[in-house]
Image (cartoon, rainbow, N blue to C red; front, side, top):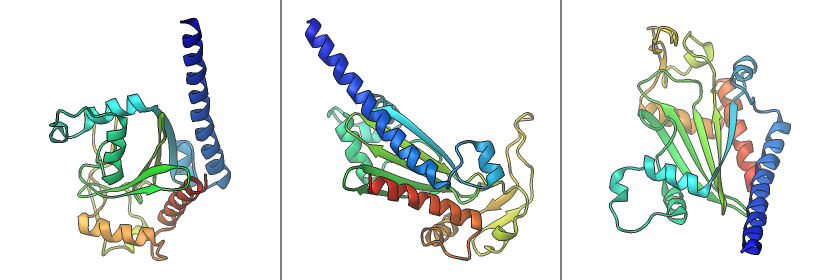
Length: 231
């Protein structure tokens, strides 16, 4: 019994070290590029996209995903385990993060070593925050790694580079966000779903007409894919 317990402890330790190794290696590669800010405060100052990196065990990720799923998807006698969850994400699963009242695009990539999903989202009919958000999830045998890339450019005041995109965004006056007073932001740039889709098309091809911060945001996402594809 002691031998079995000892063996299980060793295996658990190896898995934890492996998980830390993947996360640390990818983080180091991204940090060296200089394309990212690892704090919100620095992101606003440097006008770089803000990056976050999380690691979740497969059991915890499965539990959270099931809790967040549309209950219609759960109307089955079949037990939903991590393998089933991964199959769902290979198609598209809209859970977690900024997905409601937003335009989104989703894709799955199975490369040499890592399998991962990419979801882009941009607010619609709400004040936007820069070029949008990317959520990338890497599915490993025992862990799921989540990379969240956010453009934290403040756009509650008019911005010359976004004013040029008048065929996509409309600036509306209103109130600024004030957390202390419980006021939500109603002033800024707005778009509908079709406009958000046009913006995303330009973003993916890094169209020269886009704001510099948006181009840096897309460059940062492209580099994440490059690192993961060559891991």
